[in-house]
Image (cartoon, rainbow, N blue to C red; front, side):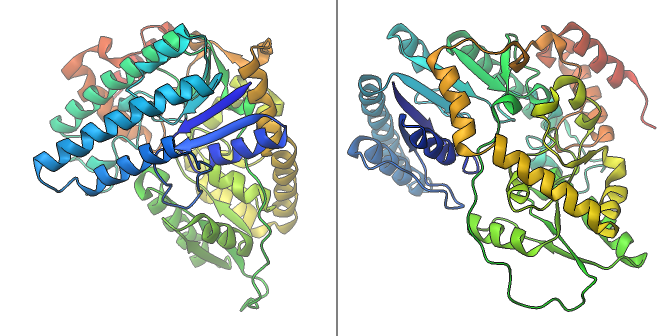
Length: 440
């Protein structure tokens, strides 16, 4: 069984997955079309994918060039992808794809199935979450002010969310039609209509990098170092985290707060090694996403807030739930305080998190589950989730009040059929009831 992995990297997920597959003796190659900005790297040395990658790089460099030059590079990118696809179909039996990646906007999936290739597609969030509940989709229009600003959302914003929602629906339907297996997470899968494998049943591949603890002595023995590493400040709730830290500092709790953003992966790991615990985000629909998992591997516990904290115990079996301090956004300050003042609790949670990811989320462990899905073996029933079970809609990277404003304008403009969740009757009923409420 020869395994193709591509065409996009997602925070090191696929590079680690490939390492796990190789460690198990599988024949797997990873082909990202673009180098990741945080330096996760590519394993490809074949001229065909390298040529396709080079064409993409040249096209990006020519975005500000003349229209004729842009057309030339677009044509060359298209040709290189066609060659790449034919080469891959000849060479590989299984295609592990995800992160919105596709050769030709998912039209190639039909050809893959016709030729008997097996497709395992992994969704990572924004690609299957409705745009009207996606704080990251809405980030551009929210960058100019606080998330509760009366200027948000504008009519233009609503039009954009509707267009993006329709595009996502089209993509999801195409993937559902042709993929043999879909991996997703309930709080981000509202657009799906067919059963899928729960992402946390498979896990997030994380692996250790040996890092020395910082040699510089602490200025004060009692200080507790807190780390936050936002990729998108508004969606991660950075302003709320800063405010909570400042209130705790004014209350006399000795906290040293550090932020690190848009830095190479190794720098983030070094910052994790230097802290006592991390604060991941305020509006997360996962109890442990990538950054918190990295911290767990170093034995550092994480504060993670999100509305999904009220639902995850119902949706996920106990062995799928990673240890973190996962709570409602309104409990952010309380959660930070709890880890700051109780060193024993902090150490215990960090140990539990480390043991969990080492046992369940090592590249080898996650790869073994992918191999099971790739080979067509029966999938355990507890791994499967049916869309009609879903009750969650409070989104990712957005607070309740902002979401209600978006929904009310969205429904007035486009109607409830444009939500894209007709397959989940109870979920849709809850969404409409939520939108009909007046703001507190």
